[in-house]
Length: 429
Image 1 (cartoon, helix red, strand yellow):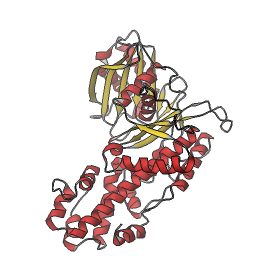
Image 2 (cartoon, helix red, strand yellow):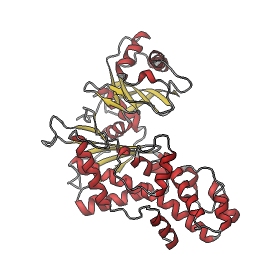
Image 3 (cartoon, one colour):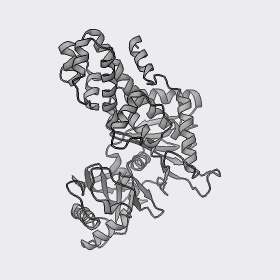
Image 4 (cartoon, helix red, strand yellow):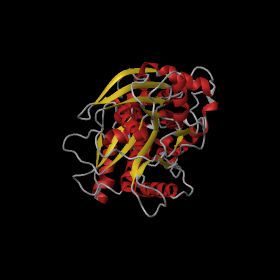
């Protein structure tokens, strides 16, 4: 790394070489505190479910995937060999986006959105990607919506129970059960379903690194945790707070919608990499890290997105990106190098954070000791797969932490329609 860039980042407490083992140990401590019912920054949410022991076959299930601003629904049918077929897929907007809705109107819109699937199956697997507490019967109690959804009366409701009631009022006759889960559990279950021929895994992890970030793993039964049976645990990893934050992270956090929250997520998820990079490069421009003309040009930027910074990292000399176009106008060769290294440091830190979370989940699972039966990690999310070198770096760090140091084995996989498939499995457990 350029010495001036290294000095600038160090001066602002941007960690270039975090001790990964210390970070993993810190995260494991927090996870264990949460499992034991003591104060922890992660929620460690119980789900009361495990992957099915045998492949689902010869059944159909209605799947709902609601998160952010989108509402997707379809029918998934597993044939006699357990191969899934997706039919009747529709996508619309989440109720409560345009205007505030009462609880009754909110679930009535859900029922309207599902009219094309009426009585096609008595089971619904519902991936509901908002904070909720899972109950032992598979329902979910909403903790709160993101700011886009305007339906305050729904907070505190049993989502499955209210949906069942609304569907009955719309003439549904066959509905037996609605199972709630979030996207990390869906990813985990998709990894456990329909493994590649000849593959065998000792445990499963679901990991999301997209706009947001979270992880789920299978917690084995242990005498250390009273009344905690083996089950999938949702970590809410983004809430982990024992993290090293730079001046740039602190500056951005103060401007965010909820300052002081989701500290780990703000270090590594797609929604925040662009804004944090904006703080980095504007500070660098003000402090003389670039030539004057290029610094003045960068200081005219009002914001920066992940797409814009990532476009520069993929093709620094292309003028199709915002930063590439500015650089082409007035940057010197050294400016290109320094800008690249600054942005790359932000992305590289994201990969380190992801590797720390995944390493902790593998270790906590108690599995992966047999190289022929690794822990299966299903990763989902555009930040993980499309952002510059993130997935390659995550794998490199996992090799170092898990394989070389701890003799624990893992395999990262990707599966088409993973969230839909996982939600379908959940609906039939």
